[in-house]
Length: 344
Image (cartoon, rainbow, N blue to C red; front, side, top):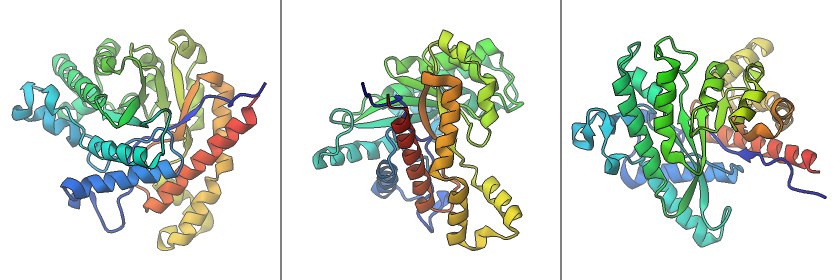
C-alpha cells in the first residue's frame, strides 16, 4: 500500500541575500524593513520551503544582545524582560500569514508553518565574554533566549512548528571553555519553552552532536553535512535512538566563496566577473540530482532518524536573491524526488 514516503521536512537555516544595492549597514526601518522580510520569506515559500525561517538580515548577535544588555529592557543583568523578548521579523510573518490565509494558501491547517531561529546562549556569551566561564551569566542569557522562544510562540496568524537554537561555535571555537554539564544546563534552559514542538540545534561541527542530542527539549541535530559529508559518520545512530533524537541533513552547500574558489581553480577563470556563468557553473556542480544523492547518503546512515533537510547554512553571503532562491528550489526538487523514490 502506498504512503507519502519518508516524512522528511524541508526547512532552511535563515539568512538570505538583500536586494541588489542594499547593505546590512543601510537597512530601512519600520514598515519598509518588514516589507523586505515579507518578500524574502515569500520567495522561500515559492521555492518550496515547507518550514521557512525569517531572513536574518540583521546581525545574529546584536538582534538578541541589544535588548538583553539594555537596562531599560531587562529585569536584571542579562535577563531580558518577557515583554521585550520580541523578534521584530516575526511581525512580518504575522502579516504574511494573514495574506496567505486570505488567498487560501493554507499550510497544514489554516496557518503558515514557520521555523524560528534564535542565537544560542553559548554563542551570545562568547560574543561578549570570550574565553571565560561565568556560569551564572551564561544561565541568565540562556533564560533570556528561552523568553524569546516563548514569546515567538504567541503568534496568531502563523504557527511556530520548529525552533532552532543556533550554536555554530560549539565544537569549533577555543573560546568555549564551559564544562559539558554547564553547556547542557544552559541549552536545557533555553529549550524549555519549546515543549510540544521540534527543537533543533544548529551546529557547524559534529563534535558536540551526541552531547546536545541528550539535552532535554532538543530533539533535532543539524550539522553542516553537504560541504563535509563525513561529518555525519561521526554521529552514532544508536545514540540518536537512545535519546529519541533526529538529524537535520544539510544537502546543499552554502559556502559560496569556497565553491567559487574551487571552480575558478578548475576552470582557470574568475567567475565573479561573469554572473551568468557563475550561476551556471555553481548549479552544474550543485544540481538537484547531487542534492538528492546527499540526502540518500544521510538516509542510508540514519533511516527514519532523518527528519529535516535543506541547505547547510544560511544563504546571506550569496550574490543575489535569484541564486539563493534557485538553491532552495533545487533542494525542493531533490527532496520531492527522494520521497517519490522511497514511497512504498
